[in-house]
Length: 317
Image 1 (cartoon, one colour):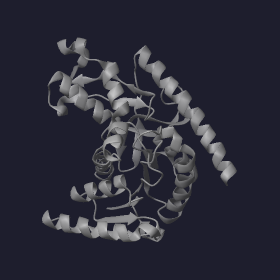
Image 2: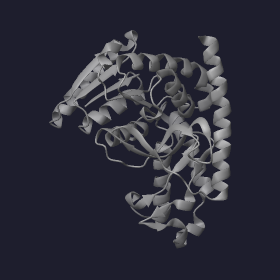
Image 3: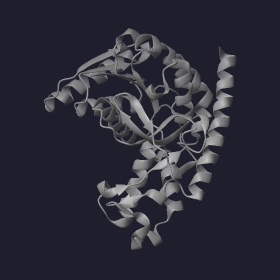
């Protein structure tokens, strides 16, 4: 198995690369950066190899600024782009990062035409759309990290409130990876029992929990400068699901063509069956009226922003 990471000199890119190597998911790992960062990722590769030796794991790690090294990749992770600062909204990054993602997606299409593209760069819903259009790949092979990490964060808050093991909690957030995310509390369960049947449900403050999820990235960035481990392990989790053909159902950003609520021509976070072919199925949803309204609103807002970004790319070209 071969995975290439574009933007490997960034904190998320290098942490994700090490996470998937440490979990022994890949045989070949390619770290791609710009030429000015090549020395750094060469050091990262050696450091990773030393750590992996301590765990008796052998992975071929290549550091390069040559895109030909991505040839025959099973998955290409795009984490490159302008990083978000604590005072920035994810959408503030949209136009400059869209130019980067469009260019890289075209290069991936040439060097690794059979790969699956996993987009991490924010705003991830818009960037996934850009990668899908620029690469020319079928939509099942272009996916964004979307609400996967958001859902994991909500899972933590639920487990804490109900005082249960996090493994027993099944909940998710859909919609935008941003201010218009939608928690699906109506279908959330603990130990296979819907949350609403628990006594503790009456005191669960969904608005507060959702607010903490929305602000989690900003909080971490404000404290340490960047999110790192959370995204890295979430990325590694998705890589494992694809490479091992696990058929799990995470919440990822994918292109919609009417599957949910009749929404078309926009990329949003939704539950998908994920396997070796990428997105193998978009899971249809039954939502509460409030959840449906929130999802439709998210679609409207992301669609408008996406159209503006795509228009700017045409001007750039």
